[in-house]
Image (cartoon, rainbow, N blue to C red; front, top):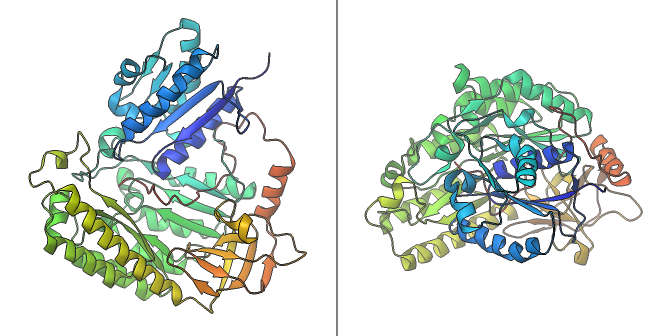
Amino acid sequence: MSARTYEVRTYGCQMNVHDSERLSGLLEDAGYLAAPEGAQADVVVFNTCAVRENADNKLYGNLGHLAPIKAATPGMQIAVGGCLAQKDRSTITAKAPWVDVVFGTHNIGSLPVLLERARVQEEAQVEILESLEVFPSTLPTRRESAYAAWVSVSVGCNNTCTFCIVPSLRGKEKDRRPGEILAEIEALVAEGVSEVTLLGQNVNAYGVEFGDRQAFSKLLRACGEIEGLERVRFTSPHPAEFTDDVIEAMAETPNVMPQLHMPLQSGSDKVLKDMRRSYRQARFLGIIERVRAAMPDAAITTDIIVGFPGETEEDFQATLDVVRAARFSSAFTFQYSKRPGTPAATLPDQISPEVVKDRYERLAALVSEVAWEENKRLVGRRVELMVAEGQGRKDTATHRLSGRGPDNRLVHFTPPAGVEVRPGDMVTVEITYAAPHHLVADGDVIDVRRTRSGDAWEARHATPTPAGVVLGMPSVGVPSPLPDAPVCR
């Protein structure tokens, strides 16, 4: 009997992407194989998000599409997990009775057992835990690439932002011990990874559970001691807890990249108060000023919500003022929408969709204008890129490759003739053109540095992916930037 195949479909933030790596690892550890591209999988897993508007409509639409396929495919199973599953629980099987398994954010490790139980008992299995069963990083992992990886430092969040449902779905913050995190990074580097992104719902609050307020800056410095680890990033911090020791650690640790994602949400002190964001405009801009003083070339990105209940035109103008002052290299901008279960959903003075749309368009135009101006300043500069896989959507047509600079800007470059350049290798180029959301280097490549990460990528593509993954010893992967899905915070 041939092994059963699986497919994991992911919606939402980087935390969900990382969870999906765990789900894939669990299934492969249980003997499943990834379904070939274009083939119908025996098991389809939806890892859902509850933050985006119409997340439930999107899920039920996809489930409806699979219903006739499942009816015509004996033995096929469908599982739904993630934040929407944690929130809606048995509602999913009521609306889509052909779903076999529903599991929550706290028990992703139960998936293989639940699938087998559903198969044997021939009835849907719904298991939602209220607290974390096991820290996800102890689970098997199947990562998607060979040169960069997510490394989770914490899960959950202790904040109470009025627009966010994540704390009620992910729970209070749980921190890993520093030794566990560093051991995972060292294992990844030994397998060829040269870039890690430290991941947490509120990453710079790391250490709150064991009472060390400088735990995160210490962790960054400890990453600097790991031989072979070339790039360290992290996402996403909270301005209220962003302290000077973290800025100092970033500036003084060579492999911590000059890049910072700092969620603003609003530039209005009144709106920030209504959002229960425990900082104000002056503190936010003060952080940006100190980061730039320590790292003049740092690229700073952000999140902004437009049209929060009660937002006036004056409040909106305050947000535009911060965008002009902070000089963000890019911003994830969102139109506020009611999320059931959040305090903001019942606030008075909900803004009309027409006003929200108008403000959103004006904000997006300003963000693009500022980002373009900042990118133009880089024309003529030499930059070392880590060559990326699949991040340049038009690379095939333009005969270019793509990579990320230390500041995480995306650069498309013309590869050198007769020289093999692999994902994970490093190239030095000179920027020749700037667009609002990317840079181009069409001159000669100045230098190519073959790396262990490039070797690991080549080895992975030369041999089949193994079916099993050792428990607690993740294989390698890549935290590809997600333009429409920043971490929920």
